[in-house]
Image (cartoon, rainbow, N blue to C red):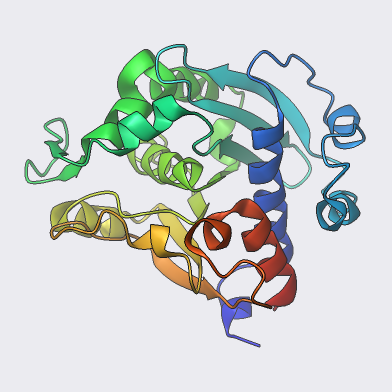
Amino acid sequence: MSDKKNIIDYVTVKNLLLYSILIYKIDHNHEEKNLKKLLNSDLFKEEENITENLNNLDNNDYLLDYFYCDITHMYSFIIKNDIHKYIKIIFRGSSENLHMIYNLKIKQRKITFLEDNNIKIHSGFYQQIFKGKLYHNIKNYLKNIENIEDYLIYCSGHSLGGIMATLFGYFSSYVFKNNKIAIISFGSSKIGNQSFKESFNKKENIICYRFYNKSDLVTQLPPIINYEHVGFPVKLNTNNNIYLNLLGEHGYNSYFNNLLYDTW
C-alpha cells in the first residue's frame, strides 16, 4: 500500500475516526458515560461496516466528560486510557445550520495574543472554538487531570470537528508544553494564513496528520488566496464510485469505507 505505516499506526487512526463518528450520534443532552453501553446501543444499527469494527476499540478507554457550547452548539467529549497513557479529545463536525453560518464567515481574524502578530485564522472557526468558552472549558478540565503531563493528548474530528481539533491542539500546545499533542483530522478544510501555517508547523510538541479523501473538494475550501493547510497531508484512496460526489466524498461514511480499503 502506501508509506502511511511509517508515520502513524493504522488502528489508532481507525479508532479516532470511529470516535469522530460516534460523536455525531450522541445528542448534546446525553449523559451516559459508560462507553461500553454507548457502543452496544443501536446508534449504528444501520451501519454494519461501522458496527463490525466497534469491538476493536481499546477496552481500557473510558469516557470522562462531555462539553457543549450553548452559543455555537459545538460539541466535544474526552476519552481517557490510563493503561496506554493517552487522552482523546473528539470534536463533532457540522451538524446544524448554525454551524454553516459560522463556516461562511471566511474573513480572517488576526490573533494578537501569540508571538507573531501576523497570524490570522478563519473568523468563523475562531468564534466556534473560543466563543462560549469551549476551548477554555476543555483546557481547564485537562489542567485538573492528575499527572496530565504523563499523557499523550490526541485531538481529532471529522470535517468541522477536524478543524476544531486542529485549533484546540495548536492553542493548547502553548499551555501543555510538556505534552506531545497528536492531531488527527479527517476532511478538514483550510484554517489560516501563511503565518499561521509557519507557526503551527514549527511547534515541536505537535504532530498533525490531515487525512483527506482523494475526491473530497471540501478540503480545498475556502477557495481564496491566503488560506493554507497545516500538518502532514495523508491521502485516502477511494475504493469505488459510490461516493463520487462533492457531499458523498466528504461524509464520514466515505472516510470510513476508504480507510477500511486503504489500509497499511
